[in-house]
Length: 274
Image (cartoon, rainbow, N blue to C red; front, side, top):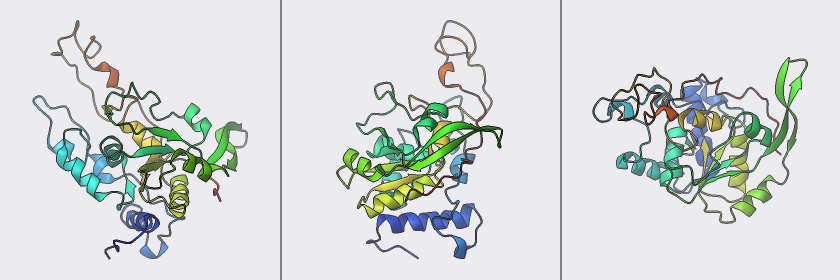
């Protein structure tokens, strides 16, 4: 059923999550409640489609559902769909960030940034981004990465809600019309809590990031270039550099980062912020 044009951000997000639950998680419609959902699973179309290096020009089929700065039609489409669509995957999120002025609000705890990784910190070094909007960090739940003897490994422990979260967000973004993408580790728990909180606080242009930082980091490097993975790398002989193969200076080896990622889903059971 089409949403009313007067539907608020929470209603739009709820609808997007419910539809994603039915389509991606194969959950019966009557069980698709917002807080209980594991709905923000990767978009199959965007995940399956892999960028391919064409001998001459770009393989058009490989671009389907992917963000490229010269794809005017895709950029316009994404701009028209959000924020009403509610939840953006890592391709759509990058488009919103680089083309439509959305800030990214990282709500993970500080230890996650230190241990797992962070969004780009050097705005001048992110050569593929032209806007003045940027990444911001305000944790919704604080935790410490500590060894758990029972589990036999390090886990996120000593979780505590950041009671000042909403005040800090409002201090950072006093204009309730600010365009904001909300990201946690995988988009399945804390991002939903933050979307609820910001919607209740009156923010109207808020979008959740499906797959969170984990899927963003699989796709974009620190300079916001597309990573060449997954896939098999080939020797690049005609690059005009000072040697042969991908190791030659100038052979674009810097973003040929073939390594295995862990499961994109965060195994931590995060507490409720409220």
